[in-house]
Image (cartoon, rainbow, N blue to C red):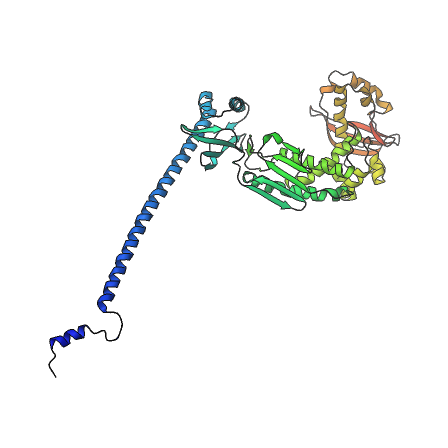
Length: 463
């Protein structure tokens, strides 16, 4: 083994062996990388910490703002609950003196409501939305055991949140439902209402002309649900075949468990049914207090029943009995034969069946007839009243006209109707009724020239 000199050993340390970068350079580069990575991590940590602090601060500020709004709502409800008008008005603010006066009237309306009904002003916040300085709150109220909600709007002033007039621009995004021959536009707050409304709209508007045998199809229907209590339920004066419906949340309390309240549904269904009948009937109007008036109303009510079908509304049992006997074309058959002053004899003509042989539920008709009597007396229309009685019962009609309490006396309730031959062989309809005092009786009608007229009692009543 030979001897190696120092310079040879040092030369070995400087040898790369043909493998690339010098080891010292590799170590230096790695150290630099670690330092750079550490710097990035430190900077990212600082950024995240600052961002977290900012987000936390924003969350805290939003939370404080929201809590302040909740406290304002609680104070307002408490003022209504205990009857403190000064505290209540302190929460209200607007440049409109009329609105502030309306809020004062609303305060006293709440106080009267608490006297008349079982009212629980819970103050529970059902939904709360804040957008910049605007706030919208849905507040729970319980009246006679039913849960309602009212929608209140607020603005954040320098001295805190204050109740302000309804903000129609703060109703949620605009939405549109496109159905068969139907378009519904609405705001996000009314989505549940529209979901409940659409099935009836499609059922009635798409089926109405099938039932009434219209000559031409109904035009497309447009429905606009608007945050404007002034529109009620009305046809637009500017847009053809456009029904406007005021949102139930606009300026009033709305049921929580029933998005489409029965009264509102009936009002909507009635307008649609009348429009369909006018389309099928050519716009003729029945003469008030005539049999045609009743028949028109019965067809309308039957159509409303179809609109409310999912809600269990029966509509007209009179027309439904015709449908049961003659099929779904029966309402159209009746409407086609109806004239503005038709008598009930038109049924015989329309269905080619004698009136006393028609398979019809007569309760609605005779209930209408009995309710018509006090109305005519109150109107002073003696001739029209006498025309409802046959020649055998004119004395009874005259006695009724001389009764000072007849105009205000409630009509008895018709329980059932029996049709058959009287003791003289002529057709009779016996209406079994219940009077307001709970007693029962029988009112007799005789068929005269194809029309039912009130008559004297007949011993042939089968009981």
